[in-house]
Amino acid sequence: MTGVARVIRGVFANPEDAKTIKGGKVKYDDPVVERIRRAHLNDLENIPAFWVLGALYVTTGPVAAWATLLFRVYTLGRILHTIVYAVVPLPQPARAIAFVVPAFVSFYMGLQSYLLYSGILALKVLAVSILTAFTRNSKKVYANPEDALLRKGKTWSEFAARILNDLENIPVFWILGALYLTTSPSAGLAITLFRVYTAGRVLHTLVYAVIPLPPLKPRHLPSVIPLIISIYMGLKVVLHYINDPAVQSYLLYSSVLALKVLGMAFLTARVRYAKNVFANPEDAAAKKGKVKYDDPDVERVRRAHLNDLENIPVFWILGALYLTTAPSAGLAITLFRVYTAGRVLHTLVYAVKPLPQPARGIAFGIPFMISFYMGVKVILHYASAL
Image (cartoon, rainbow, N blue to C red; front, top):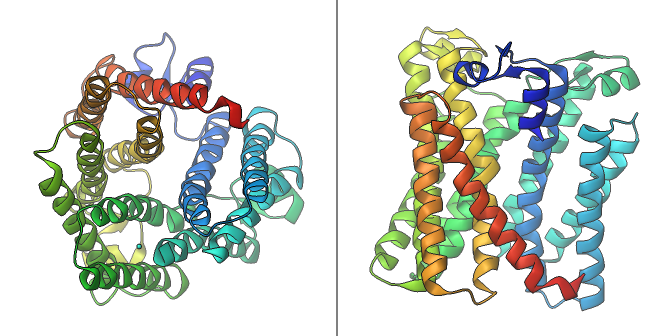
């Protein structure tokens, strides 16, 4: 939907894309495109939490009819949210209702249920959305005109960064933590890792968004320690499954992709430090740099990172569900390999060594079609559950 809007309006985020359309131009603030992107980001802020909480909720032995109803209501609410936000924008409270009902479903499932700490982190991700909304209302600054009109405020979009750091890290932990448990680790070590990770991410939000503290001492510690834990679990999974065939290839390639997502944070930091531009005043003060939100090199890496977040978590879920349909082992392994190679190449030709189109289009399109294929296969296999 974002791609279609960009082509129709002739506005793009990358110079190589603008050159593919006659009259195309680079523009970062087109209102129609940005509205769709905000709707997309809202999905990324909420749907991965549902995937985790829904899976954990099922482990609690709920009444089947009640669980089915919750899943149906959540799915319908999220679809309606996209329609009234990005397809046919309606005045508030239409979008708020379509957002709140699924959010309550997620909160309910999280309160009913690695399980405990994943539930806590999923609720934390949702809570940061509430913190963002609270800050917007207190300062009367909003990302959407209809919100500003309702509250008599102004349009502004700085607060999105507050939740993005969670989205860059916590879904990776959910996947790596689950995969790590399949390697039969020491129970005591696993529990300690999960506890420390959860405490670190909660502290990170406190010193980043609630009571901002200068970097290095001590804000970076709550970020770095969970990152090291994720990398450790990912390496353990890769080393455990690297020689095993068939279905376990999913675990291997999912871990490779998780480590790749984490690596994007280092790539972003490298570019920021190289150009001495930062998103937060405390970071700029520590390095005698400047606060800048539109540096083209940094934003290119961040777009590549966001593209990972828009696609790779979907692969993790669809890949796991696809395996439950009993596919051909050879086909499944090929799909996982090609997907992983495509996503790695996508980052290389987007953020490391930018190449003209259609290089990035091909590197994006092939993995996208693989995810789409697996999703269709899963729906057809379980269609009777509708």
